[in-house]
Structure formats: C-alpha cells, structure tokens
Length: 116
Length: 109
Image (cartoon, rainbow over all chains, first blue to last red; front, top):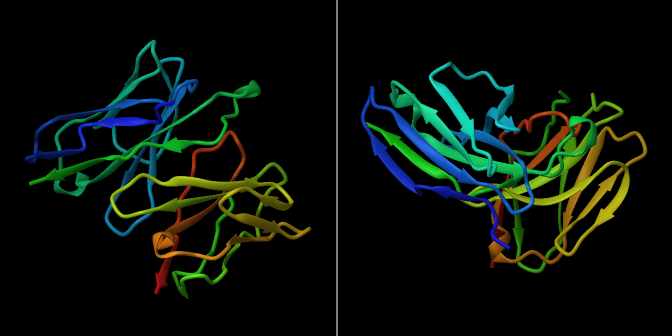
C-alpha cells in the first residue's frame, strides 16, 4: 500500500518565478492538506482540499493556490516566488469522516524548494 | 485552538525509557491529543493519538490524566534511530493541524 507521494523531491527556482508541486494521497484517502515548513520551525498549514474544493485556509497570501483532481491528487502552486518561500513543502492526506471531520493525517516526504 | 507547551530538547541514552510531557491547559472537550515524529528533511510521521486515559501501540504509549491538561508520550527503550523532533498537537477532528516547535530528542550511545 503506497503512502503519500510527492514530486519533485527538490526544486530550485529564482525570485519571481512560479512553481507547481504535486501530491498523491494514500490509498483510500480523499482529503489533502498542504503545509510549509521553514528551517527549524514546525510545519505551518497552508490549505486543505476535499471534493476538489478548498475547505480551509491558513494565513498565506493569494500567491499560494491549489487544486485537487477527481482522483484526489493535488497540486500546490506558488506564484511570484520570494526568497522567503524557500522551505520544505509537505502534503498530508486523510480520510473524511462523517460530519466533516477528518481522520489522522499522514504526511509525504516533502518537496524541498529553494528560491535564489 | 489549544496551545501546547513542550520542552525544547531532551537527551537520553540507548535502552532508556523517554517520557516527553506536553502541557495543554486550554484543551477543549472535543480535542484529541496527537503526537508526530519528524526526522530531518522528512515529513512528520504519526506516532499515536488519544482522548483520555492511556493509549498504547507498537511504538509508544500516551498517558493522559483525568483533567486532560497535559499528556506524556512514553518511548520504551529508545535507540539511536529515535533521535528526532517530536510534536504534540491538540485539536478536534475538524481543525487543521497546528504545530509548535516540538521537542528535539537526542539519543546517545
């Protein structure tokens, strides 16, 4: 049973460029959340997708956007990259429970983004 | 969201039992307590989750007192490979995960 997978593993971009990161959830999971983790800090929630819609959003600017596909996989897009966007980007998947709650979130290995 | 407080770092030796305590004085009735482990440049790995009393799995135990204002993650007989950052999170099943800075555990030979 494959866990959460992310691609690419590493990425180098320059300021002002745009980037797309990809995530495939664990089998049986339908909810995908994205997190940003700066060096030495805990992961910070960006947003969560369920049924191809953004359901929750953290304190991140509109430069951060996402998408979820019918097969539950997801993309994170970041426009107009800043040096401060350099971080480990984590995807987590979970199963939706009744009433809108979600089960335990399982994380992928992350994508290391470096902005020069 | 309930705020958590945990030690910044802890040191231990191989074979010892390690207990990491997390304080969450403002925990709400619907909140669960969840612990994750993270190695450098990897995604957090789910360890254990509980609501009250004691939960045990093949990796760890989680002790939660009756008032639920704190919890203790217990790692039996740690090895060098248990060196990692451990995060304590509190929230209900509808909330996004809110990570603090975690506890850096260093296991020495």
